[in-house]
Structures are given as C-alpha cells and as structure tokens.
Length: 192
Image (cartoon, rainbow, N blue to C red; front, side, top):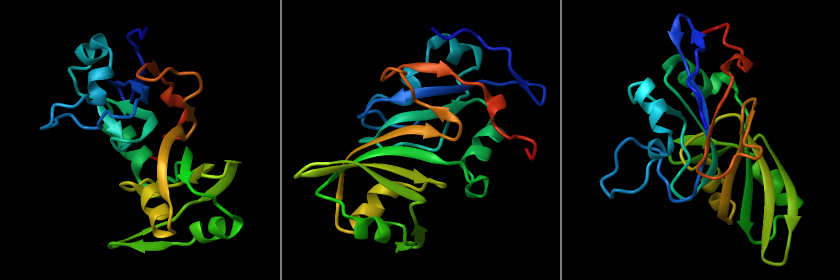
C-alpha cells in the first residue's frame, strides 16, 4: 500500500516510485496493441494525486522484467538517465549457452552497433549449466536493448533479463507487479 508523500524537491511535490515490472508489460503511456503498460500498475491514488504526470526513468523492453523507476519530476528523471551521471544499473541475465572467461573479456570491449557504441562495465558468472549461464551485469548507461545487442554481437542470445538495481535503489523483495515509494534524497542531486 502506497501512502501519499509530502517530499518536496525545489519547492515541487515530488515522488519517486520503484516498480517491479513483469515480463510482457510495456514502458509506454500508449500502445496500439492494447497491451498492459507500466502506468496501469501504479496505484490509482498516486496517479490521481499527481494528475497522471508520471515518467519512467529509462525503459525495460517488453520481454525484460525488474526494477523500473518512475517520477513526476523531470529533472530527477533526466539526472538518472543521462550518461554523464554514470548511474550504475545491475541486471541478472540468463544467456543461452556457456559463457567462458574469454567471452567476458570480449564483452567488455566497446562495440559499434548501428551508429552507437555499446559496452558493459562489468560481468560476473553466477551459475553455469550445460545449456545456459546466469550472469550479473553492470552498466553505467542504458541504451535500447543494450545487453541483448552486446550478447548478440558476441554470438549469444538472452533468455531472461531482470534489472535488480538502479543506482542506490534495489529491487529486494518487491513482488512482481508491485510498487514502493523510494527516497529520492539518496541521490546526489546537488548539480540539478
């Protein structure tokens, strides 16, 4: 249950929400295919109190799940998204096939994919079986399908992608499809 917040930032009532986005939900306000949107999962009293003016901080694609942040404050949104902020995002990723140490070294290179460079800050093997590998991956920027594109480039496909942390905020025990209010004072907002 989320209670109304009285957090003020620069004189504006501000809210920062963490949502455990389920797979099969889109990060958009509108959808021509009438799929479930992340905004459909925000409690109605929050949408009413903030007149529906909630913005996602970055996105997770339709097939990804995990922590997505939402706020009504565009300054906080842009601070969290911009690459120069170097906000760390952490993911648990299930890769089809076995990852080896040389693959880890290769994945840390910068790859030119389309017109953009993609890289992974760090990668750790959590578990390996005969058919898949679970990885812990850290990024300091988030581009469209960033992890999926890097692994495709080195010859692997991503079966499951779960964001477990965005900056100082962790998904913890937050249930899938549920929200919680976050303390935006954890952020270093002095330069906003």
